[in-house]
Length: 234
Image (tube, rainbow, N blue to C red):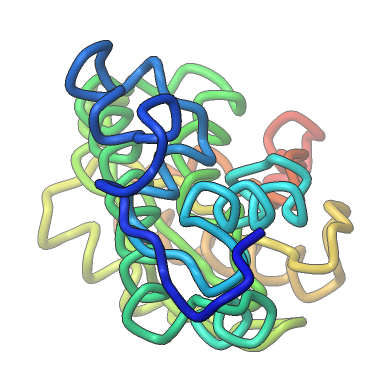
């Protein structure tokens, strides 16, 4: 631990503790999550180097990036000395880039053949959210994903679903079928009465304009419920 107010930069660390140099020599894959986080942080506080601070952050997140991603900018600033708003925003931006890359890779290669394909498609968008969101996937005639978009965003318990907007999006993209997903921040993946009603209404709307409705899944903390798998598609 440091005993004065000096804040160590990466250049002043011992060679073994320099994540940037390690990345240059051995590649990014050789770094731990904490070391990658330390590069984003760059400078620690008067008691901890950036590496020590990053390790503490990861330890408090149970060494789980998904738990880190659930923290807000305010959470990071309040809980960790040395993390100001600029650093917290940098961390959140890096996590969001990783999430978008994963989503883009999935969309580019995804053909929907089962509910697990839908989970893989939507889970990166919904896994960390403290509030409820409703997403739609637009598919072509081969059941390949044309696009996924957030339809609505609500509170911690329920979001209002704009079904006319969903149908409009499908028509504009010439989709032949749609899939939908939403999350339950509570971690309970069983459908509510409202979820069942929404599913029936979406099916009726799709049938009215001649578009297929393949499935509705609920994602909750790594698990999911599929209306199609359960035989409850209206």
